[in-house]
Length: 241
Image (cartoon, rainbow, N blue to C red; front, top):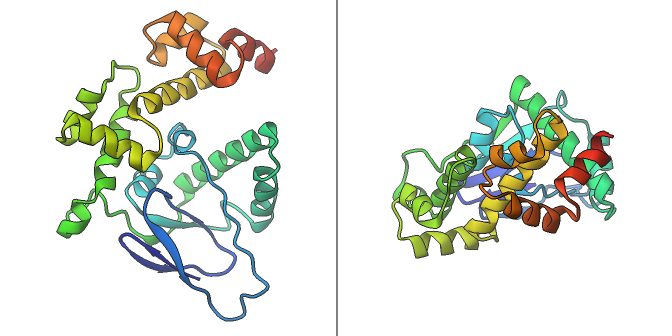
């Protein structure tokens, strides 16, 4: 099949698992012959879950920069993709969590062994005026700033200053591309970090809150309970105990 992205067009061979950031404009252009019996399996991984995955290095930069990659058979087989798709569509939260964990392992393996580049990252490259002026480019920079400074105080004005945009324009642009406000995205990334630290089991709950960027224990507990339906202590006990 031929797929068009904001920065170019790629041809995807049958039986390949391709990864890209869905925030980049994309669409199917045409299918090859003899595809009537074929299937296209789509699995959507929340960006905050992807950004929380450790040790991905250049892979994160490539996908966040608008690159399109194909995973090698060394990283994943079609049988795994079939299982993930079934789990993803099951509506079962535990099965969905397993899919995300296994996809994280796949990406970590790809980060070590490599991948096939179908379209190189372009957002941060010097190129045409259209590409360097893409609104998505500013959102990528804001997301990176948030993720890299998640334990520091973060507000909309400071985040907008990173990309040199007016705060109102920057926050509206962020919401349009990410489908979530800057403030809610910051909280979500902090909660994901807190959840990971809880699973690690070496820090007290109070220190988990601080390490995740929450300055108020009360605020941490309120956001955590609202997001996960339980307190941090309950999640640690149910998971580890």
